[in-house]
Length: 420
Ligand code: UD1
Image (cartoon, rainbow, N blue to C red; front, side, top):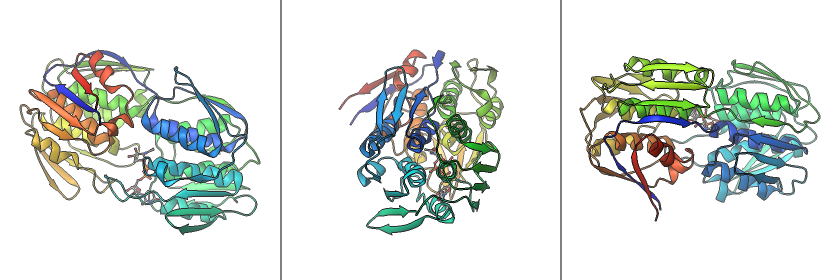
């Protein structure tokens, strides 16, 4: 298994380009199942999760061609297999996103039930209840979801008990081919859902309300092909901004969008960083100063994203002052704290709250990555620590960050991949 070796202490300084958003590219790839026509998707990041989704779609019979410029051409004209096997679903929970489109277009789907993962139990009950409300018969058997519908799914009024990103995406895609109108209330408002909705609209879907908590979809009998570029990755953007702030450096990020990151930028401004942005770039300059600690509380968009929590915790570990970090989305998402404490951080955890006492510095240590964003926070901790940090199990980080070590090297960091 590959590892990262990081020698901390260098201020990040420079300019890099942000990749396409993993969490938008995954549902958009799943959406290609909704039409027999070719769909051309641009700005697709080269990541392990994307490769997994491509493998999954290929195993169903979708023809896919990815080029080296991040363009994927998908054609689901001859889908022959309606199943998502455990071997793939267990490596990536977002595989569940094929359920809605398959059921809507082919009337059946056999998808492995995703288990829990390091950050929590992550149920999919809301996806299943929504599909049942649209007329699907669902059985759970042998660890698999067997879903069927006679004829088309039918439009329904669905009120989510809880805001769910994946649940909103699955039902939004299913509703596009349902018979009649579907209303999704208390829907998630994440920018990735808006991006998916825009792609579906380019495929001919009739959707209104994207970006609000009520989505209205008038189902069509069929959708057509389109060309669509994936939005920039707001979490990758936020991660590099935090890494620059924690190292007291400066970074200019190109090909990104500040309008998707307001809660994060407000908190970064509170650290004392100077932040400027234009239509497709963001610059953060800490001017050599130690960041001030900022308290955060995660919540669904437009509030502070859970996917940025671990990175802010790492920055707070070396910031001036104390802070509280409250995680409200996933029950076990403060796992990285114990690894950071091994590097000299002083972070206490009580339930879903971390209390962080900012230290003047951290000390490099061997640490273990446990999930995608927790690994990013360990990279940030390694960048500010004195001496060498070796991070094990970086396959977690390869799931969601494209060429992270090259991008950090471009900013002056001393980081190397040690291949197994
Ligand atoms: C997506 C993102 C992930 C992000 C998360 C929250 C992708 C591929 N992943 O994950 O990076 O951290 O949103 O912003 O886009 N829940 C239920 N029942 C359900 C579905 C969810 O109780 O049927 C709960 C979950 O356990 C969790 C909360 O709702 O506590 C939010 O989960 P959800 O928004 O669905 O996350 P994902 O779509 O899995």
